[in-house]
Length: 176
Image 1 (cartoon, helix red, strand yellow):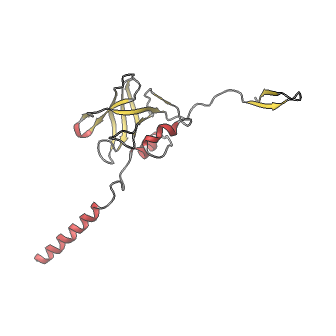
Image 2 (cartoon, one colour):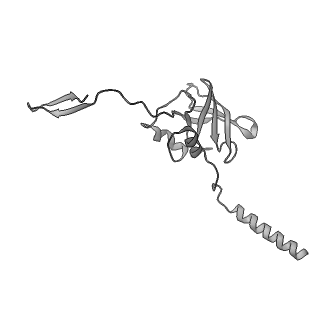
Image 3 (cartoon, rainbow, N blue to C red):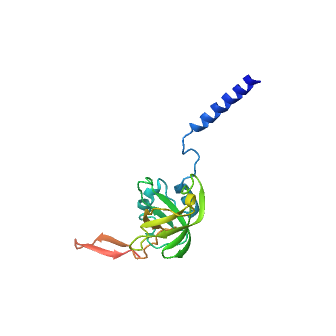
């Protein structure tokens, strides 16, 4: 009986050690794919690249709007940044965010409080609710601003086409 228990115990330890050797990121929900899925903003890659990738593809700014993604900068505590979708605008300095992988590894948090603490009221320094302490985090986090879910508006101006005229100079005429 003791030999059977030892064999069971050894097999259990072996199974547990196998689990411990699995890479930490395997199967863990990350903020960027989650933000892409819930916001419809089709940007890929680490969160700290979203602001730059959005240029020319999506409107960006410093005004919170429902459905926009708040893009956090890289920092010592967030080397690849963070992205979170605005689920509700409470005021010009407070929003509720829905995001993944913030308070709990791979966890999804809905409608958590975020407050703009930037000196210029431009959402470049933000404190976010942190689950383990049950309130706003003890530090602020640098942010770039908001990426808006709608693609940038098309400029509604006639196209100008340059063409050579018969006199040898360049003439410009409207295509429409």
